[in-house]
Image 1 (cartoon, one colour):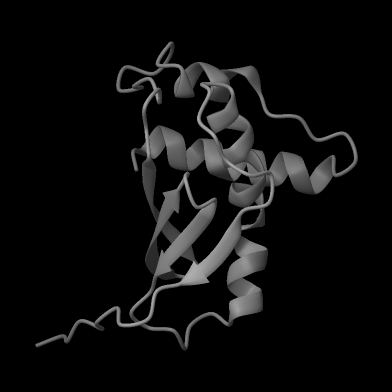
Image 2: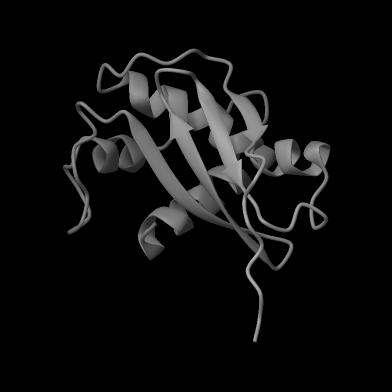
Length: 127
């Protein structure tokens, strides 16, 4: 994930927290998805998966959005850092706005995105 998109995720999360009842997605995010802004923005048409590295509580993990399954798969080798409920709470804004952005480019996805940890992610050893 590029730096600009990570900043957008942060801004969307803060906006959602302060304007819970009237939350809307800023136009520049739709422009990003349609490839109209950002020097590295690419249109999402035909996209089947979206991969995002995530930093939560000083811990990195990766997520894969599978649009066909409406599921956000979490690849986290150190599952002791975040409980399932913490993980779902942290990814709540992503689960909310990714379907809205995807639908804007005619990607079929359910409104309710499931968060599922992937078992078998190998923890790296530090040598």
